[in-house]
Image 1 (cartoon, rainbow, N blue to C red):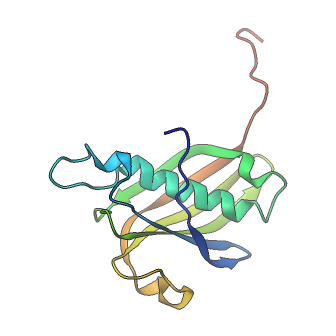
Image 2 (tube, rainbow, N blue to C red):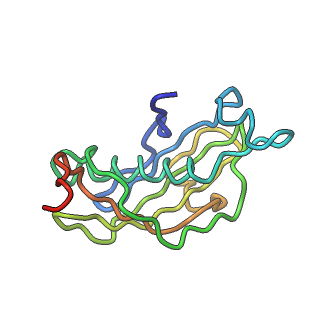
Length: 146
């Protein structure tokens, strides 16, 4: 698997907030062995979903918003499993934006039913939450000793 999109659609877009959703497909390869007998989405992939939503937020705020990478994750807490067949809903809010970084409050929600509507986001169960810091891609890496 080279790249995987965790946003089927944008549910809500505001100047400092974006909410995306993605249906977790039981045939996705990461469910095969995580965990046998009880497949759940790996936490690192829930974090990736939040990062992708953060990029969707930034693409409308800065040039090359999709060229931002994860700089750090702080206080990430996982409170529920995300399972095949559920909707992963990523709710990301901009806390601070500068040339060299964007700080985001990120929450991963889950829905068991149909696709999520904007007015229903606040009532969803929280699966994970934390703070992300995104940084612009650095195209040229310095040589050691410089």
